[in-house]
Image (tube, rainbow, N blue to C red; front, side, top):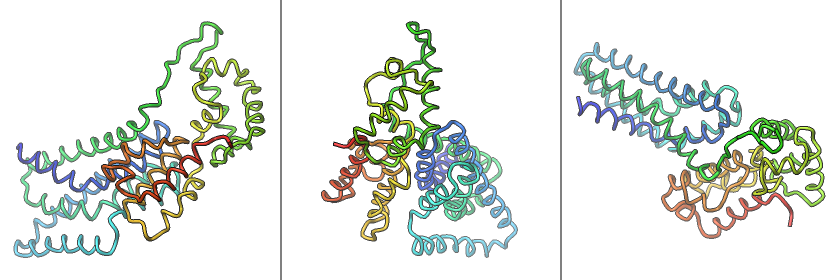
Length: 339
């Protein structure tokens, strides 16, 4: 029994490493509890479909003459080798990015399930079927239970990796403001909602596109925000949100950055054939983080999830010249005001 558990765990992990990277891409785009839930459901759905297909094929093979079975199973590694030779090893990540760019986050369950099946199907079925054929009923049930547990673990692990990136962004405890009689939580929610529904305001839109604001832009932005009924003045705003970051930085943290604008800034690394798949994946992760969080500190490029691609982070993947250019591009987005 113990050996069955270990073998099942090793088998699933061996086929699911690429899936972890794909999940990172999805979780990096998710912002709401519903979107996180849909990713969990979609990944479970896609993985269960692959397991059911593998079980069906294993069942069919039980009725194939024994002398044919070995030959048929031998076709699987041949197919996998041809697949890797023809397609690159990051096909799944590219498919995930393409689906998100085209369909957004509105149909996450279907998108995640589809990408899981399309990206991991051949590898999973190719390994699961030969293994299932060798198991008796008890060992098969134990194996399926281990698989279902690990599906959940991989979801949680991908989610936790991105949570690690945001650990420094402390969230204040929302308590009633006894000095003003204003409920702090309700006030903050009202202000944040006001900012988000007005993200097309000319100055907020400039922030979202990564265009630094002039002093005139800043004055216009302050007047627009502080004079709003929902905000009730600069003093009220600073009593609830503090003075640690400027108003443009606060707004950028809420609305993020426009994906296409960030992608365009790093386009040289995405279309230039001199960069390998790991370098491109690293740049795509930078784009995801900037889009979601609105800024990115240079030190983060040496921490998770970036050092999962190379243990030295950006230093292990790019030349000094490229590193300087990447840092400058990130700094341009981090700077919300013109000099």
